Length: 443
Image (cartoon, rainbow, N blue to C red; front, side, top):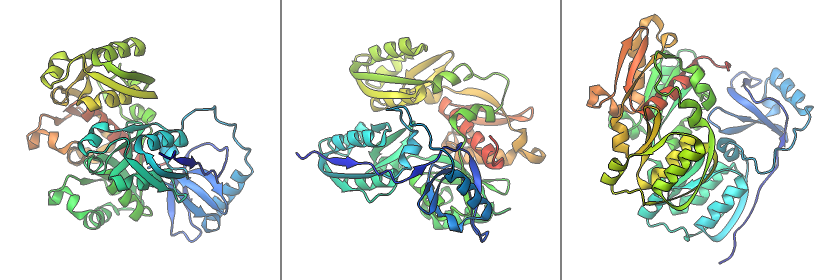
C-alpha cells in the first residue's frame, strides 16, 4: 500500500513578544476583538482569540494605536528556537496552518503521521470506531488546502464520519455522532453594553434552533448580568456561534492554572490536596497490560494513592486482569486517568485522600459538598440568578429540582454545592470563566 506523504507549511514570521490578550480595533471603529498577538503574516496580523481560534486582519484596517503596536512588533528580535520535540499546547498546534497529502493510507498511519506533523498528542476513541465498524486499516485520502490544522484535519476525517475535538488536553478523534453528544460549557462576554438578552434570543433562534432546552434539546443558554452569556452546547455549535457572532461576543476561557485562584472556597476543600497532583504532567505506556498491574504501577510512579474499586468494576464485567493499552506522554494526571480507563467503560473520582478507579455509576453516587465564595457575582444579594445560571448549564439533569441528587443552597454569603467530583470541576471552570468574562484584561 502506498505510504502517505506530508509536509508542514511555515509561512508566518513569529515574533518574540509576551503572550497576552489586548483589545484590537478597526480604523473605522466598527470592529473590535480581544485577542493575543501571534504573528505578522505579509500585510496582515495574526491574532488568537480566547477560544483558540486564529484570525487574520489586514494591518491597514487597524486603528492607529494598533498599527503602531504591530510596527513595534516587527522590530522585535526573533525568539530562541524551542527545544527539539517540545510539544505545543493542542490549541496552539491546531490553530497553525498545515499542509499534507495522504493517498489511500491506513487510518492508523495517517493519525500517527499527523501526530508527528502537528507535534501534538492525538488519541483515538477505539471503542466508538469499533461500534461504527471502522477499521484502523481503513484507507483514507485527502490533501489540505493550507488552512489551519483543526479545519484541515476535520475535513480529512469527514468522509469516514469521524471528527476531531480538543478534549482532555489532546486532540480526541471519535465518530461525528459521538462528538455531537458531548456538551461543553463556555462563557462569553457580550461587547455591546446591555446586549446580552437580545443576543441570546438571536443565537437560540438562528443557530441550531432545535437543539436548545426550551424546545426539548440538550443545549442551554443563561444570561448573567447584562453582558455575560453562559452557553452549554456541542463544540460544533460553539464554533458556529463564534463564527457568526465573533464581532458581538468574546469567549472567556480561564487558563487551567488560573482556575483555583479565581475560585475562592469557603471552609473545607475536599479537593485541596489533589489539585496540584491532578495537573502534574505524567506519562503512561501500557501495552496490553492487566488493569491491576497498570493501576499499581501508576500509583508507584506518580506517587499518588490510587485504588481499584474491584467490586464495582466486577459488577460491570471488568476484572483486574482485563488488559489496558495506552500510550500517553507529558499530559496532566487527570487527563491520563480519563484517557487510560475510558475504553473499559471506567472513570475515576476522589475518595477521601485517594483516587478511586470505578464505574461512572459509582462515581456519580459519590457526592461532595464545597462552599464557594460568590459575593462578587451576586450584586444586591441576588443569588437566585446565579443559581439558575449554574443549574441550567452545568449538568442540568443532575439537580434536585429535576429529580437528581445534586443541590445548591445559599450559606453565609456563598453557595454550598453538593455535586460529584466532575460536577465540581465543571463548576469551578465555569466560575473562573465567568469571572474572566466580567474582568477583561485581568490576569
